[in-house]
Amino acid sequence: MSGRVIAGRYELSTVIGQGGMGQVWTAYDGRLDRRVAVKLLRPDHMAAATAADEMRRRFVRECRVTAQVSHPGLVTVHDAGSDGDDLYLVMEYVDGADLADHLAEHDPYPWQWAVSVGAQLCGVLAAVHAVPIVHRDLKPRNVMVRPDGTVTVLDLGVASVIDTDTTRLTHTGSPIGSPAYMAPEQAMGGAVGPYTDLYALGILLHELLSGNVPFAGSTALGILHRHLYEPPLPVRQVRPEIPDALETLVLRLLAKDPQHRPSGAHEVYEALAPLLPTRGTPAGPLDPTRPFLRPLAPWPDRAAPPPPPPAPPVAPPAGRPDVAAAVDEVKRLLGEGSITRAVDILGGILPAAAAEHGEHSPVVRILRKQYATTLMDDGQYRRALPELRRLADDRAAEAGPADPQTLQFRYDAALCLEQLGETAAALAEYRALLPYHEAGQPAGGDPGRAFDIRHRIGHLLLAMGDHTGAHQQLQGLLHDTERVYGPYHPLAAELRRALERQQRMRGF
Image 1: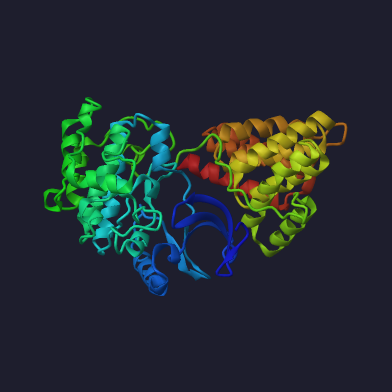
Image 2 (image 1 turned 90 degrees about the vertical axis):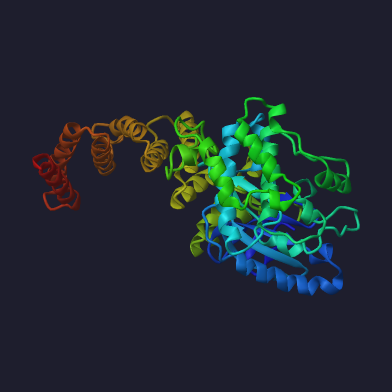
């Protein structure tokens, strides 16, 4: 189904999630030139054929309601509707890892992380329940942890459409929903409310703290039976270091009777607040304590960017990647201003082209050069940087360090470093490049590029607080600019203004 266009606008790319009733795809929004996530649901898999049309109407209505809920912990809903036999929900593409994978990578999960996740989820649930909306399917797979440690809840409103009768079994014998996280009243087909989501929150916290859901089993009915009749295992029996107050809260959330659970998400948050971390340093990206240790802090830098979702390559009838066709498509997209889509195609075709032609072949080098250039045009400097460095190294090995193309790749890499705020690294790279462009070189140098580099060096010195070095750099550049181009050249005028600003600041 890759390549299918939903609603004449969203081109499906790669499956990133799949269940018995639908799939989640990365997709490309051709109208706004952006990457999105598309959830597809099959009404005929969830209800009798006679009820499929009604389900479609309810689905669109629910999505409209949920799209009105504004909270930073909720994924943004862009669009919803039906396409053929499928219902579709278009959401923002969330960078990060879902909570299930996050738990698997950090086992045992620090209890402070569990508290931080729970507190953030309480903020989301409080906003949702105020509408009022009940999520009905809160579980780790529906929670994303972003690189800055904030959590985002997915699938709001979807479960309320498909969960009209949770006790009904599909033809495979599995109940609709997620049995491991179902509250007793939900499993019994009773009325659901905010307390239902609180029970699911208790299951989720128990899983984070103990490593397992409290009620497991080989069949869905067996799991639901345990929800109804068995008490949960207190988490301190598994991990004694967990605070007693946290264990007490989890047990309250897992009360069989909704009236014995906390009164709402606000109360749960107040119980978690004293346990939240108040000092220290985040462990790194995807640390859920970060929003509390450093409120509103910028997202952390990542040493390497996540790989882009692969785009469907343009392929010939034989099924092998057609590099020429992909390049033609990229040119067309760039002509239309669809840079994001062009980036995806280039990133998707590069591995196949390298496998077919060789990593150091002219074809791959041309593609990599176009890829790096397009990434820079799209402002994706962190992804462009390693591509430019590889290109520079390959070209230097072939033609030498003074080759004009080698120098261009290194200059572009320095620009990326500058844009990324890596001031010292950019300054070092510009200084290393400068001698190759100054007069006296065998090729005669490049005065225009030399002046540009000196100008950038002056501004980087200012950024690093070296005002004396910056003044000397810009003053010398002004002298040489006036000598070569005359006093009325635009660069000379800009340098005089910069030096005047420095002088005024010094005298302030």
